[in-house]
Amino acid sequence: MNKFTIELLVANRYGVLNRITGLYTRRCFNIDGIHSYETTHPDQTRVLISSTGDEYIQTQMVRQLAKLYDVLSVSLRTDSAMAQAE
Image (cartoon, rainbow, N blue to C red; front, side, top):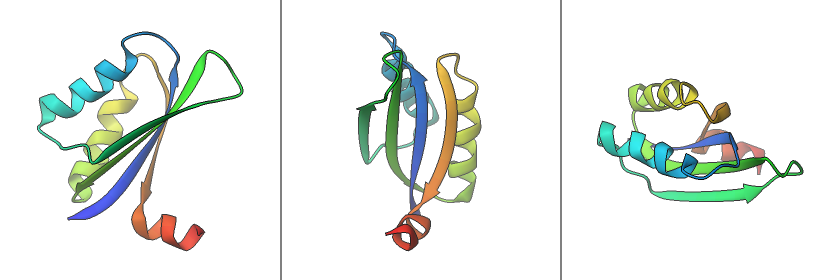
């Protein structure tokens, strides 16, 4: 199992985080950590979700999250890619 982080840019509306975590719950995937940050646009929020899983889980979550209405963009970061950036 590999650690990975999914970075989301979402609309800053009520219930968005609930729909995102609900997607993980319905798929029986675990969230290791979740962080949200303000952006320069008051109507958008950046969310980082850390998880553990194989390549199938990673691609499945990116595809499913991209389908949510309030999700504006999704990108996948693996721990190896983040370690090289540091």
